[in-house]
Length: 319
Image (cartoon, rainbow, N blue to C red; front, side, top):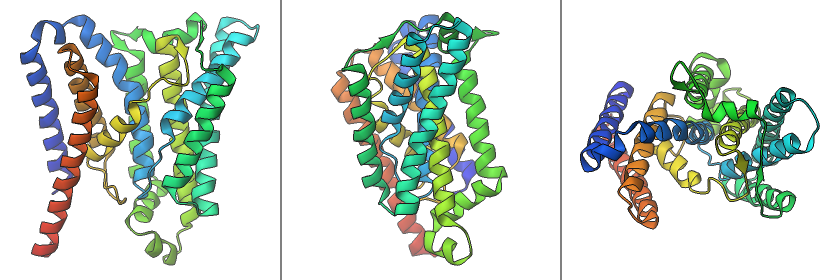
């Protein structure tokens, strides 16, 4: 299946989901209030999904993305509430610290997977527990809150009626697309994902490529932390726990091959919107939240089975 056809199908699925949710609860779903909520929720989820995507293109999985996001938000938030500086400086330094913490977490993951050779699922699971432990220790399980007004502007205000978080999501979506499609390192990420051994024998520094991919994913979690912390005006160690499953579903639904080497940013961004619309619509219909998790898991299984049979048909027909 061509990439354009995949994107067309994903776009159609988004439109069908919007129409279905509108028909089931038109007054609430199409209200200005609900649309505003969705447009502010999509970006943090979407940027986390992009972080998952970059690593999955390598054929790896990063289970620590949510823990990285929360730890970056907590450390940056603690800085902002403890330092005696002008609000504008606090906001700037808070943003910088969150990105640095996200990058540092990505660096640690990348070093474990690339240079030490720990399997990605084991390394990121261990780091997830480590990051969550640090977050719980420094907050004692409580919330960090009351951030500067200038910082809250990022997650809650708009520019020309467009929510600032949505603008950030689009910008980093474009940056991720540009890196993956228009730069040498992006091309290498796809090649390493297709076949690590072949990439190694062709002269590609596979360890360096993997390391840089994890570092960039870390930067994305830092950006997601900025949006999440700003939008809620608080951050704690149990925020965003549902995003891990949803982001993996979004990435696979967006056409990224779990074995690596294939996937598009546009597809992932569309699938993020689809799942956000579906999740918000089901919330409005007051569906049991446990049933929502069941549906997300079911969607993931269906997509995996469809991908499996498409691959099998290609092998049979020799395509």
